[in-house]
Length: 147
Ligand SMILES: CC(C)(COP(=O)(O)OP(=O)(O)OC[C@H]1O[C@@H](n2cnc3c(N)ncnc32)[C@H](O)[C@@H]1OP(=O)(O)O)[C@@H](O)C(=O)NCCC(=O)NCCS
Image 1 (cartoon, rainbow, N blue to C red):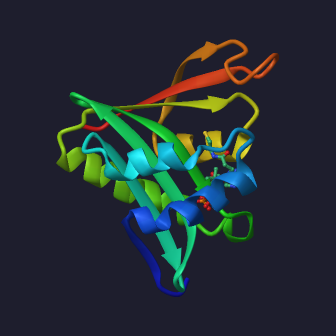
Image 2: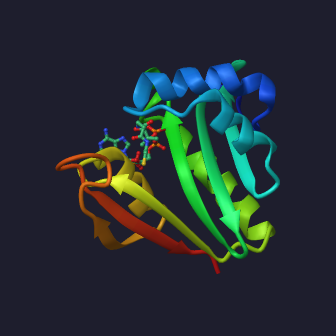
Image 3: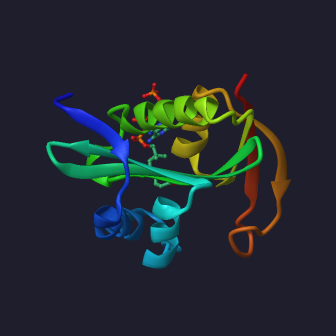
């Protein structure tokens, strides 16, 4: 794949990140939440750029030595090319460098691509939250030990 660049998100990426969210997520994040993800010291926002276009992003928030992945999205046209995998691996390396030892996330129980991505990266399920995303939309809780 030509020139996939993975870098820190900046405030000038907010519109592009919002567009990714709006094209893929039922309840997209608002610009203020994305801005905080980019500017807060306890948070990290990475973007993947292909030929100058932001095609994927991931965000995580840390407390002490644990981190929670808030979202990961790849633009529909660019899915299935390993972009989220590469982005996530950079995220894991960065979090490990910062001393994070355990990563958590929630994912809708029937989100097959996302669950497959997380399992491929080594996440395992440890519980469920009933109706977390709305009536009948349960969340699977997953975690990954980083060291
Ligand atoms: C989940 C998502 C981020 C994956 O992005 P992607 O860039 O296509 O992911 P990759 O190409 O790196 O694929 C990684 C793995 O995910 C799994 N996967 C990806 N697409 C899949 C599909 N359609 N069906 C089943 N598994 C799939 C595979 O295990 C794949 O690994 P493989 O190619 O070695 O088989 C993308 O589908 C997306 O943006 N979905 C909408 C937003 C979302 O649901 N985010 C998660 C919120 S918790």
